[in-house]
Length: 460
Image (cartoon, rainbow, N blue to C red; front, side, top):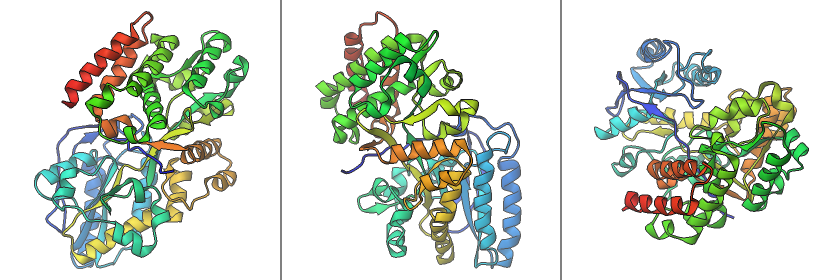
């Protein structure tokens, strides 16, 4: 079965600063962004410090290597107290730079606060930064249309890297070309409190063949899960239920542009009304537009089901013993690489060779194992045995992460997010209507009709 997958995006806010690039005429302007964990940097370790130090060191090394530099822009600018993962990734990048010190071209990693703005600003001027990690954001279509980025597929094929890049090979395929490779996957299933489920006599996610099965389990939790316990994290989580409902029933519809015909289809209305009814039973107090807001309740045993990604494994603290990973009804998950390492066209032969070698390095078994064990992310490399790595670790977080990734990677239906396929405006409109439906007594049929009219106007 052909698997359908998603790509998530990192939120970003515009700032200022200009960064000079080398080769192919690339220059870049940076901006500020929130991290993938939703935390904001509280340190000055951004462009003004980390990048200046990196550029200074690169300048000295560049002079020794004949003056060529490959500038690599990435979003791991956070200090170690804010987001320890960022330091791990910076170290991985620096290891590559050190290994290639003295080469014809110097590898220069530059931490910035908004790689997406760097890329889009450059594309607007008809160029592209040397090499960028797009942090899950899609490659700008204008960059592809203008020939500003290279096709990585010939290199992947010649080096036999298909299993190393994993689902990048199919999910980042654009008319037979691959313009980006992300070294880690954005993967979402769900988490549940096994003790609450057992106490309530609720069926667990591995037994949910349909959304009716999930709804029955949520009813059981409300009836017997204990005082103050609610069934699941609705709101942002609800769009994930809606997304997977459609993805299981009609994979093609979930992965194709939204049309007026589908908006007015029976399946669209069925998916919306099913999730809306579940949300209303779950209660408006338990519906928010940021699923991260439920982490405290989930860790403390108030929320039975946490509709969040595999990365949440590191945030459960002392609650890990009662927490299990799961996927959506009908054996569904949402997992995809999105945009990652993307290389400009027009580089010198030395720059392009080094950039391609970096792609190979980041998808290598050694680095991919570090991404799993130290970054706690789902690696793209399908040769990595996550279970074996977890068995060799004494970390409960790693064990949970392996469980979650293995379930999500093995789902019968793996799909893209609603936002990535249908657009943020459409996704937000659906989410907002579902939140409105969580209020007791709300007419779900009327809200569905309102949503269909709103979406018809949005897509034209």
